[in-house]
Length: 319
Image (cartoon, rainbow, N blue to C red; front, side, top):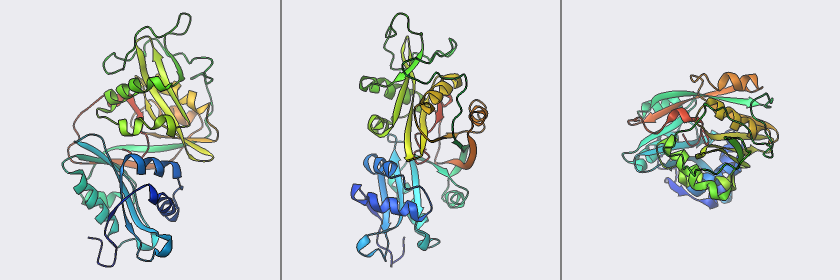
């Protein structure tokens, strides 16, 4: 319960975009208007109106639940306005979304501040995540400009299973595997590659990437699309690269380097520090670790998909 003096929890919609952005700013977060717009359009957002909201209609708290099929969901953007901290709103909203999720396993990225609450609610740690941010220094990995396809090593062959394979698409004289901008006709193959790696259907978000992301690229192989990556802008001077889905770390590096060459400003990568492939490489390219979170799960998290092909999340709001 949120207390008699708080309005009841309600479903948020696109009309609440301004209120959600204001709540982020209140907590010292980036406004991330584009991300809020995406989440309000493809997920289930819940909030509590501020008792002193007045004509401005401010929010006291908000949270987002995104479903990945009937048995898996994620929670993100758990925010309580500074003036309403420690009054039970966070717990009330989390209990609400867990009830909404039903029997589905729920995952989230927990900060050190939020982790004690999540542990009380039964969440258990799954893995760690570190945010690497900075100006990307190009090295020998990734050729960048789409006019010159980026080669991928011969041993980086993706499996045919779930790859959305479309044989013999590579033209004569073009490298057997290369990176190119995604086309509209690539979306079914991107969805197939993503579902094979993630182990659940993320179509409600992936289908929106062509309009949401600043850049969307694919790894083209003789068998079809074997991986993809997106870069989207969270601030005018900063872009997040995610998701990155690739058959191996070398292909992931090339996808990241290709995108980093095409976006301005700093970039951010959210990486698992216990996987050795990318964190050291990202640091060598000029990105510094600036924050850490813990991925947690409420409910059983069975083995699914091919997690070794998942290198960065879409967003830490979408575990």
